Amino acid sequence: MPLLSSHPPLVLAALIAIFVIVYAAIALEHPLKINKSGSALVGAGLLWTIYAVSVGDAHLVGEQLGESLMGTAQIVFFLMGAMTIVEVVDAHHGFDVITTRIKTTKLSTLMWLVGFVTFFLSAILDNLTTTIVMISLMRKLLAKHDDRLFFAGIIVISANSGGAWSPIGDVTTTMLWIGGQVTSLAIVKGVILPSLVSMLVPLAIVAHVLRGQRVVAPAREQTTEKQNTTVFERNLMFFLGLSILVAVPVFKTVTDLPPFMGILFGLGILWVVGDLVHRNMDEGTRQPLTLVHAMSRIDMASLVFFIGILLSVATLEHTHILTALAQWLDKTIGHQSVIVMLIGVASAIVDNVPLVAAAMGMYSLAQYPPDHFFWEFLAYCAGTGGSILIIGSAAGVAAMGLEKIHFFWYVKKISGLALVGYLAGAGVYLIQHQILH
Image (cartoon, rainbow, N blue to C red; front, side, top):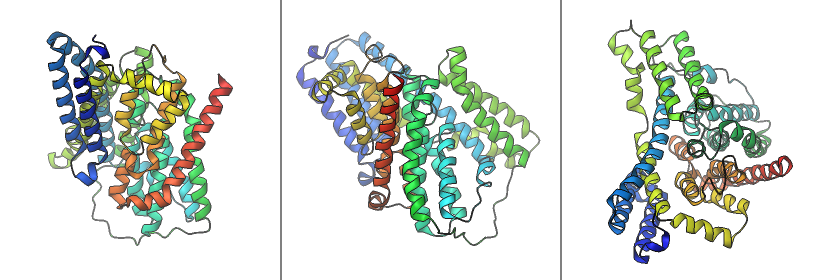
């Protein structure tokens, strides 16, 4: 493999410049009105083209591209399967199993309920889906827009905190799990308490502010939506879908097969069960409930973004640019925990997926073995740090769109809470690690 020094400085400078421009385009997606998936794909194409031409060894570049593609495909197949399962459950109104049981007249009590449900649901589903489900529920429970805005902020914090400690709850933790940097049981044991603290601190502050206030429910409207599923079907698809998602880490542990194989196996089971349950329905009623329809509803743009950004980062890895960056950080900053916390704060400004992908390329498993402090703390910081700004996570961007949250409103009302929670959780992790190790 060519060393960093074997590449002409002009080539290295071009690769770094293109990556920085692509990164900036991703971070400024909303003001530029250019989808980040397109920017990521253009970046991947340019970086690999320049790299291939500069190396001049088609066989070597082909091998490296194949290796990078294999790692990328595992993540994409896993996410595709998980997203489809969630869409099937949603099509059957399966989340009503949870949401219909949330009933209280006090805003502070409702805040605690919503926070804990979001936290644990996010660990089983993912933070983006959970945010959409919970914010949709708030529209049915709260009439005042100001109340819904505060709840949306807490939902973003709770969803990101809940996703950080689960191998299937956040894309970045999933990447670390599939890459072998963390194992399912260790990440749960190591990160669940700090993640819980990062949610509890903001939740306690907001619940204190809201104490004594009553829930103002929206006026009941005559619903025109026809429930096309029975209670049995809703319960079946909800519990089967969640069971499949929860069983994937167990499947990986028992078989040593990659997680995407487990999720595709589970998807097949859900597909067969769904077809059997709905086989006597007429085509018009049956079609919205099928796996084929669910696959048409998954966020393909996000999957394409992951492909583009992971392949872009791979070129920096193969040219050893990331290794050089890691060495520079180690010399300049020196302390692992400070480096990881800075990555977490940076994930609030730019997307945490390329940040974690870069960290995975910067530091090898030989340097930091599986379940090392560095990887666990990175999962926590990258997962929860995105809550500090509304644009810092997929959950935040979804909430921004659903409730029309303004960037500066979030900065004034929620960012401080998220930062306090992030620092509190980080402190708990560092103390916990010091005691246990």
